[in-house]
Image (tube, rainbow, N blue to C red; front, side, top):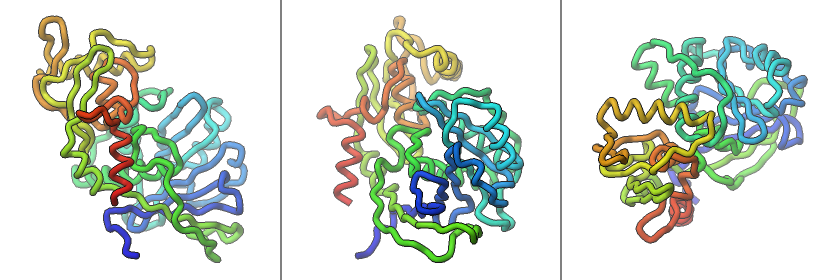
Length: 322
């Protein structure tokens, strides 16, 4: 059977026979790979491939996450094993090889900043950290790194860490192919690996969703918009919820964004209510829903079409027709 070219293939390599142990996700024609390390197995990590510039993610219970960068990812992870208590799993993003295009210190600093912004907008995890600084760099390199960030989002979704959006690129992906390879993908000859290939649908579903107007009515808000490849577009005329109702850790960032959009004229106060005076693009549907409703909510569940069908259901229906 021919494969849909809009799909994205990700290979997961298990170290040893434990699918819950150390594993690596990578995709053809991408510059990076994602190494997932359970904290209790950190002592088993000895691969030189991790002693290089990395952007990394720490995940713990109660939807807690930390995003960081380091010149030597392996050494930084050992530091966090002693200094941070909340996490139980780390995902480290490193270059696949020592080619000319490998990540450097400036690259991972830029990725850290952009990943933090996307995660904050999504609001699916509590981020317990200071705001990373965006470094100055060449515009062409920024575009390349934005492509790498998209791959990072796929990798984290594959590991079921939906940091950037609850309706992330995949949900409960089916494992379509499984076979054992005699040689590992990454050069660690002392271990055995099992490889899993995951197919991800992307552009075709998004194009069809872009034709659907979605509505939000929570906390007395009146939001309209549509799901797009670049994020979620809020339409002019959308009205924010009457009162803010965020936990303390999210309230400051919400008010900062509201202040910015008011200053830019994107949002105006009309008869005691905040109203969008022009269309505005958010990074994710959950980020858009949180902002418009002025309360924490799940974008895939609260955005609905004219018949009341949830966004996540629309995506599932589209996936079944491909």
